[in-house]
Image (cartoon, rainbow over all chains, first blue to last red; front, side, top):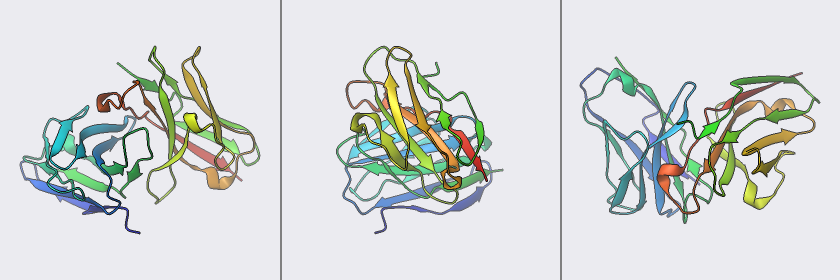
Length: 113
Length: 112
């Protein structure tokens, strides 16, 4: 059971570079989301999707773009990386809504120099 | 505004001692409440949710609407309980994403 798969596990970027964090799930979950985890701040929601073709902003969406062309994939794009985006990023999915169990990926540790 | 507060960043107890991880939320309605846990080198995972009124790995959590708290408790801590614990309330009666919050987390360290 793969569950939620995130790639890459680690990434170092220079300021201004762009990149895409990948997230894929094989559980046919409608809901997917991206969080960032910063020391002392817990997890904060960046963007989420309730199904293919539908996305919306979370608590901290600035500097990030998402799309959901398939049920399985939910990539997170950083168009012009900034040092403030240095963080650990988690992707999660759930079936039927946020009141149900969220399954998390292993995370991507991103450093922006 | 802080919606959910976990006042302790680090909690250290000895094996066999009771443990209580505090969680307070700011909301006047009826929240859905969850505790998630992240063990070392493992993924974040659901520990328990208040609606199920279950006990998982000896942990329980009771919703206290009067005190707006959802503290996580275990009568006898074990070394394998050492982990990062996150309180996560949904502060809405509906599936409103913007109101799904994670606390800042409490690191529990159970000493032998």
